Length: 109
Image 1 (cartoon, rainbow, N blue to C red):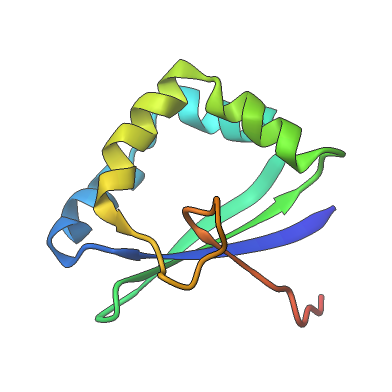
Image 2 (cartoon, helix red, strand yellow):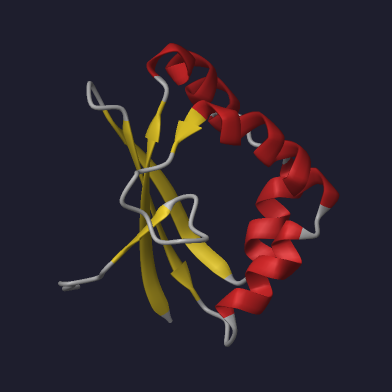
């Protein structure tokens, strides 16, 4: 199992809508997340900076392949067409990233 975290900014004017849609995520989106070997997926919002922090535990063997599989799910693509315009990527993210990857520097149970 691999713990993973990513970060992105959220446009302030969409915060109520972002919270609303995440209170009732489409079942197909939740299934796609599970089918991609992601567990314990959580998104936190830090206001007033409007930073989203996503955390999950990856239980698969090939994260890149599982993400490609997820990206091929039509309902997931529809979800991202709604959520992506709400987000503002960090200027310092790596090439090819939307949400910026974070390094896991500490963990304890």
